[in-house]
Image (cartoon, rainbow, N blue to C red; front, top):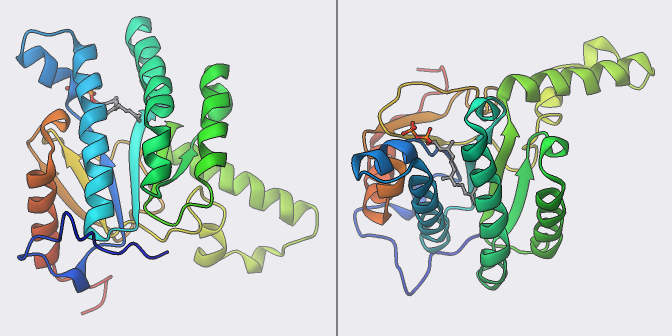
Amino acid sequence: MTVQPSTTHPLPPDLNAERMPHHVAVIMDGNGRWAEQRGLPRLMGHRQGVAALKSTVYCCSSWGIPALTVYGFSAENWGRPRTEVDFLMELINHALGRELDEMISRGVCLRVVGDLNGLPSRLQTNIEEAMAKTRQNQGVLLTLALNYGGRQEITEACRHIATQVQQGHLAPEDINDELFGRHVFTPSVGDPDLLIRTSGEMRISNFLLWQLAYSEIYVTPTLWPDFDQMEFHRALCDYQQRHRRFGKL
Ligand code: FPP
């Protein structure tokens, strides 16, 4: 996968093209607070969150970041009030339809991971269509985690592997990190180099538990709807100062 930096929105001069992360993961938190701070219904924060996501995807495109994975709806988010859940499902559905042509023209390849069977059937159909229409695209790989939980992903991987052992296709000794990594939802993209969490919470919240083992974590107090190009730039500058050791000296 190669994403060339754009000539129209070039990389800011204080970022080093050689040290850009290949894969950025984001926990987009703080939509509700953003709206409440403005005396608006929480749902308006989610709507503004879609705009922040769009700007982040196209920053990745412009700055040569090949993969972005975002937490759109967790398996635990079903516990929110029904009106909020319904709004989020409709918002995502609507955004997929509205943004599809632009994603195609900008070469974005969309992948959705999580327990998709648990989503409303109209959303499932639109997800299938959007994934099919963007599958061949060579630009940013945008992975959207919906009805997703890291523990659920790991237990599902265990179930697949156990079935293969039971059927005699695998021996228990064949199971190692590398094999396990092929059974989680993001096998082709590599682990995130950088995890960004907005709104100041210091938690992983059941996101990409397997894949985040050695990711650099950047937490900003900025609420997700305010996370713009400047904020992303700041996160990337911080990332480029890190010395990644992967447990070595
Ligand atoms: C967390 O903020 C955010 C979410 C649960 C939803 C994230 C979804 C979006 C940004 C829209 C996604 C759109 C697409 C197309 C995937 P919160 O509501 O928990 O905020 P709070 O902590 O301030 O209450």
